[in-house]
Image (cartoon, rainbow, N blue to C red):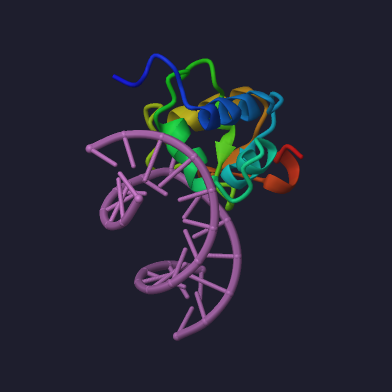
Length: 105
DNA sequence: CAACTGACTCACT
DNA sequence: TAGTGAGCCAGTT
């Protein structure tokens, strides 16, 4: 078991995700960039996938470059994530958000 | 040490 | 407008 602690990269990712203010969202590439790992969008997604801080990290605020929620979402379905976002004031339409309005920059 | 996988992104057809 | 291919990064085996 190599867990019990996360990799430095994941720590940066979680930190960046936590930096996302309520009512805002960010793309995987955005997280990678603000975490100091430009172009590591895939690694970010992977880090969140194994996210041990689920519940502590608002991964539901992380969307892809299209503003769409993860199709293979692990929260319990896109519906759950959509509900969380809407509860924060983010308007989710057809499982997508308006990055121009809600993307944190 | 090398190879495979993946919640991604961009460009082309 | 939709689908496919190639590229980049980090982690795991």
